[in-house]
Amino acid sequence: MMLTKKTLSLSRTGLITLALAMGSTFAVSAVLMHAMSRQAKAEPASAAEKFAGTWHWMFDGKSFSTMILARNKTGFAGSVTESRIMLDDDGGLFRAEPSEDTSPKPIAKATLEGAALHVTVTGGFEFSVTLKDATHAEIHPVGAPANMKPIPAEKR
Image (cartoon, rainbow, N blue to C red; front, side):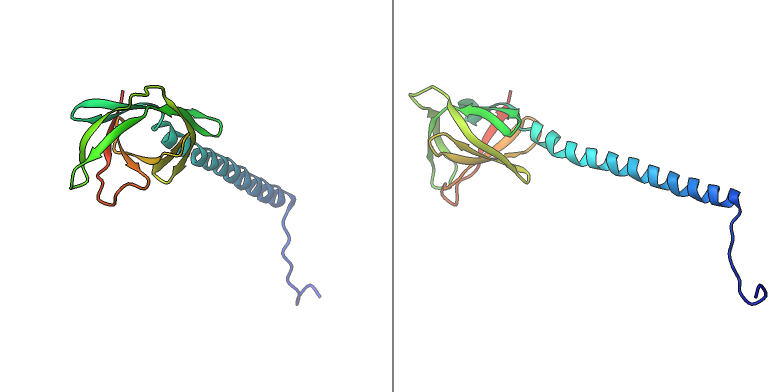
């Protein structure tokens, strides 16, 4: 029977070596997957952190509205001061000034949607914030005329 049937047998040393190799491969894979999952979780938080701070909506080199964004457990909290704007025929700002009511309005909801932060202020005003760099952003009001140019904002 031994002449026709071939069997593979490993010595005790071979079995121990195989078990150690498989265990090492599993351990290295587990460590790498854990590191990759931590990195994936950290990236959105760091992207969101870039939005946090005090932003000034700008017209002709002057601030006409202030937006304060702070990270919290559910996203962002903060406030925005009201303002009045007028657009020219091309959709750019013609006039922009603070409202008579200077009390900040709380942000009801702020969610990160891709590269933009969508903000809803108590009272219903909605806009999105798109970062240009670490200290410059563009404000895009929801429901604005189609030709409206973004409002520049600076982080200070």
